[in-house]
Length: 385
Ligand code: SF4
Image (cartoon, rainbow, N blue to C red; front, side, top):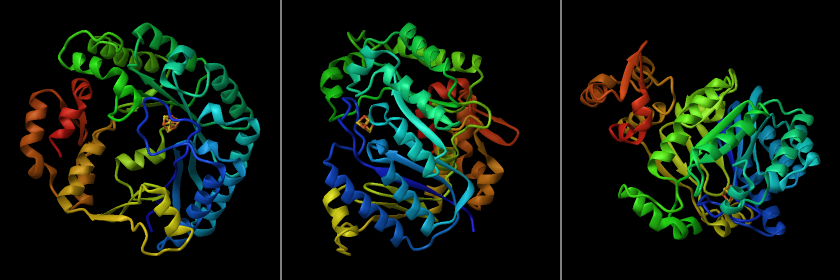
């Protein structure tokens, strides 16, 4: 039996950040408690348990929950599934919701990888983003995590922030590098509709799209400068870029997310969680009331997960556009074998054109994005959708 990856969604945050459109919201402790009970029931009801190679507890803010509740979730998982002894077990942690005691409880629950949401080392940026923590709070949590025995820590960072310059972004990178985390995720800010940021910076966005100078957002040129400096600075400090926005010291690539990009099967539990099981994609309801009715009040017909059966060509298309996110690229023979196809037949024209445009390269049987392809990744992925 091939191992399975597990994702658990905790849809609660102390306060919504101004740029965030994830499925998360503040909630009373009683609601969170009911949710955890429903989540445990959903796990118990899973029909085809298999060995588990990775667990990722994400959100929202999983660290908003008491450490003992995370322990309960892990215990329920271990009761249902055989979590492999070398499984990677990650939890996302907002520095404004944790302390040394909680981190120790996470370790006791078997969590062996911590993903800390920092975004910026500059307190002015953190206030502007609506984050609930300061740089100092992050530092304290980072040190407590090391003391608690976490030797695999990711730090989430974000560039392209309003009023951020390449220089101030570099400062953030350097301050974080001084701590030597094992992994760094460095995403660019995306301004999503429906967020306070969209209202605040929409006009700037329009200006930038027209190629004009925005007043608060960094210009496209400045954003590019930040993006290119990221790779240079992180490479200089021994971090290998293994995915468009992810960097790690050797041996610390995130196994869970790599599985997602290579289309390993995963089961998602919790509000809005998605699963990929065989050729079926499933998606849980995003309605908290309906989720609680289904799993807590046992209303069987409430909130059935949506199910989509993927055709072979949809699976191959996903394998291409997800796999190309990895710097090592897509192994042609492996995709051909796994999906009983010939991707050169299927995408011959697209691959040829992208190679001519120097966006795609082929090396050692792998198709991968070139440096230029990485800059224009969305365009390349579009060819395979
Ligand atoms: S802590 Fe994370 S999930 Fe919660 S609102 Fe902020 S960015 Fe969104």
